[in-house]
Amino acid sequence: MQFHFAPVQGHTDAAYRHFHSRLYKGDITYYTPFIRYERGGLRPKDLKDITSRLNAGIHLVPQIIFRDEEELKNLVKILSELDFKEIDLNMGCPFPLQTGHKRGAATIKNENLAKTVANVIKSNPEISFSVKMRLGLDNKDEWRTLLPYLNQVELTHLTVHPRIARQQYGGEVDLEQFSLLLKESKNPVIYNGDLKTPDDIKKVVETFPSVSGIMIGRGLLSRPSLIEEYKGNEEFEHPKRIARMLDFHGKLFRHYSEILCGDTQIISKISPFWEYAEDEIGRKAWKAIKKASNIAKYQSAVALIGE
Image (cartoon, rainbow, N blue to C red):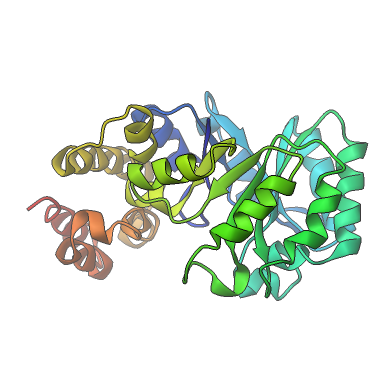
């Protein structure tokens, strides 16, 4: 059973991945937030993130997002020249800013692009490819356009979030469609979506014993110990989870304080650490953190956690 930390824009940068990998057990594969092709190359922030020294010692896979053959081929070429041997193809991002430009989940029903994806994978045998996708953009069976082409190639895995993009992260996951896709995929399938507790992971593994692994994003941001708890078959008591999360936060806060200047920069970088953790840390502390306008107020807000 493989475990993967889904990338989340604005959260899982090199520093976050570095400290998480050293503080929590789990033999986890990490992914960069999606990398775009822009103005003839990589955006500077993307290049800085994937080449950071903080990535040393972890299993890191760059994830790319693309709208057409040109973007896909250029991104693969650049990452290959940077000596990456694994690449994850984002064909599932649900956000309108991306789907509106025909990227992410909008690529699922694009048959011509599906053919291109298969050809690019075949043309780069030195690179191991994986794909992350949804069931579709507007309809739950749009995956049927893409899957036959993915079945023509060898992927390390196919990660599936069983919602359509229009749902974003609301509504129910469609386990019936996931089951159909799981049976028809010739590549290993990873489950992603609505995993917040060890029991949630257990239910998926028991319901779909043929899944090859689990990918978690928001669930790990709210509960960083989640994979360690599941793999160790030990659900941590709440005080233990909070104590370890505060230790994680403290190390990340000190890192950002050393490389950034001024309260505004530091707070804008560190406060998203708690964005998905309202249920874990309590609404009072969560609201205070959101409102904090300087370091002193921010630290006072964090001190409310666990009271």
